[in-house]
Image (cartoon, rainbow, N blue to C red; front, side):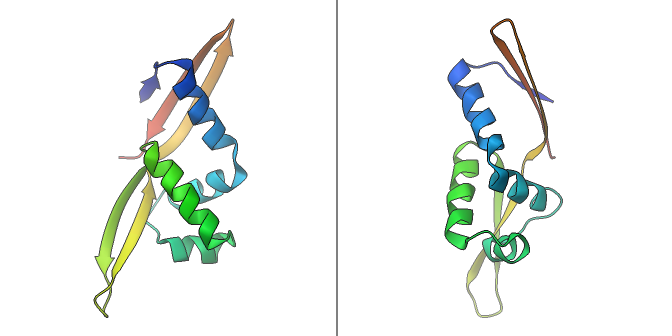
Length: 104
């Protein structure tokens, strides 16, 4: 389990990311096995452009593992797997305590 004990700004970034319903939906879809952006779009119905923006946000904050496959026609197909398994957040007397459980 990883405990975030950096500054309040970093903690607020984590909380803001997880307040977005679309991010939570995509995170759930990517928890067990890697998925392509197209698979995420087909499964969730979320616009593909939005999916790519969310992928970049999650990747920028180190919440994604990215891999790729070579398709039969020789193209790269990127796959995304969430590192985030669960989060516990607590606020008490002006102090944030955020614990993240990460996928292995």
